[in-house]
Image 1 (tube, each protein chain N blue to C red):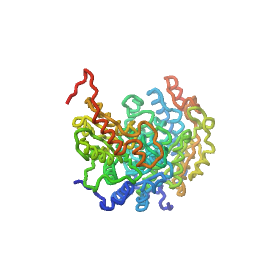
Image 2 (image 1 turned 60 degrees about the vertical axis):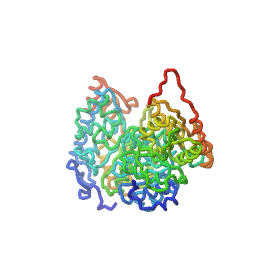
Image 3 (image 1 turned 90 degrees about the horizontal axis):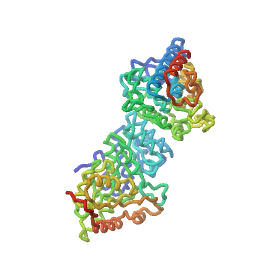
Image 4 (image 1 turned 120 degrees about the vertical axis):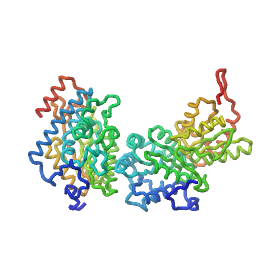
Amino acid sequence: MAKAEGLTWTVDDADHMTQAEIYGEVLTQLALKNEKIVAMTADLATSTKIGKFQAKIPERFFDFGIAEANMVAVASGIAETGLIPVISTFAVFASLRAAEFVRTDLCYQKRNVKIIGTHSGTSFGQAGTTHHCTEDLAVMRSFANMVVIAPADARETAKAVEAVLGWDGPCYIRIGRGFEPPLHKDLDFDFEIGKAIELRDGHDVTVIACGVTVLHAMEAAARAAANGVSVRVLDMHTIKPIDEAAVLKAVADTRRIITAEDHSVVGGLGSAVADVIARSGKGCAFRKLGYQDEFSIVGYPEDLLHHYKIDADGILEAIAEVVRAEFEQDENWEDED
Amino acid sequence: MQLTNDPLLTENRQNLSPQWHPPKALTKLDAAERKRLQDKARELRAQIVEVTYTCGGSHIGGSLSQHDILVALYYRYLNIDPSRPHWDQRDRFVLSKGHGGVGHAVILADKGYFDPQLLMDFNKTGSPFGMHLDRLKVPGVDCSTGSLGHGFPLAVGIALGARVQGHKYRTYCVLGDGECHEGAVWEAAMAAGHYKATNLTAFVDRNKLCMDGPTEKVMALEPLDRKFECFGWRVLKIDGHDFDQICDAVDTALAETGRPVMIIANTIKGKGVDFMENKTAWHYGGLDAEMRAKALESIQRS
């Protein structure tokens, strides 16, 4: 089984660390082994937990204050000198405020810079809409040369950080605020950029989820099984490049797909999957769960996931609906296998 | 930095390029050196006119105003090797006012980074050359610029990255004055001041015009010098077409160890071509055969 190399902390530690703390720890350890890694933030060292790096390797850490656009361009310049910058800030600022700099200074110039966007989706519930980010997957996906990853939990985040550091080019990882419950019990799982993880096989309907919704999808699948519905769950951690083969297999095997994400239904995981389904030319029932082209409200994150029907209850409701749906046929429609 | 770390002293430079002519530390230009730079500037101004004529149009006004600064840097200061455009110890140059690309390209061609004939395809579909130079397509270009407000923070990043690794190369950056409207310019200035990025030397090509008219009428910048000083820079003000003043300023910047240096170079848009000088309209323009001839003749007289 693949192990995350270079990590010296144990599985036991992971249970006590939040998603953000783990990534901070992993990054620090990888940086202790690789002198080229440099970390930076925009006055969010404590919130994004990159403060660990700052404490251990201050000579390779920069705080640029509350100026994200500058930080991204500076990272591009630092990458020119052969170093590997890792930027840490809130998803909304990384993807929107600094968008042009990400596109033009990182993606267009193919700079080896990694961005970790924290507090994505509505994980920063009480902070309200200005600090939520339900558009980052859509924005980052639209940039050529960008890799976009939404890990499901802390252990996946650790593997994702390691994976992007082994990838030559700009990468974006989005995580929550750090208090999401664990999905994986240990590090004994393979993580490969662009390859979905099939957490559960099934043949009636497939739920393709990413980030915090993956655990909810698993719960919904277990409850659906009790009602005799066989649900496949795919952890589509990499939104770009998306695992087309896994989506096409889900179309062929189950003919019903539901996507779930802590993100708008416009432009994110759901749209990326819809792209693949439509191009396949095959009939497939399809639903997207997420924020329905609306801004999110203030609330506790767990309540918001329920409110917007992207928690286990919401996914279960969608499963029940989709399983009952008939394909719409007209006289020219033929089902090809 | 101690005096013994003076980057002008040959023994403190790593891996000197055979093409680098070390200036005598902190001495003035002699007559021969001054003439060499002036002749080269004149020769390459004519080249800018030729490329503009051939390709249908260019940002000729700003390419001519920035020109003498670039000539001084490329023919006296930059430790570079055209045969090794990716040599990791080279000095870096970032044209933050990326629309001056045609002027930059002409210099890179003359230095030998690529076949000058390629410039005749400027702007054509598939050409490596367009209004804004692409570092992945044009050897000698360290950063792709064009959108204003990007190059300056890129240059700050190079300076910081060099320092983290203890590298001794210098980074030079040329900004436009209109470009200083962009907030990112001030974020970068603040960061460079805060981190005392003294291995970065920047210029503002202060030709006092932007596209919609004089900068002071569109969005006033003055007092520009005091703004940069407040952001932690040492500011020098010069005539951007006087090689003695340009070189004195760079020498001062290279010896300055307390703060990064911003050289505000007062320039004339379209400098060298009399009918273009100080004209907003010549921010971007094309030349027909008659104007080309007039332009070349004006340059010869300059």
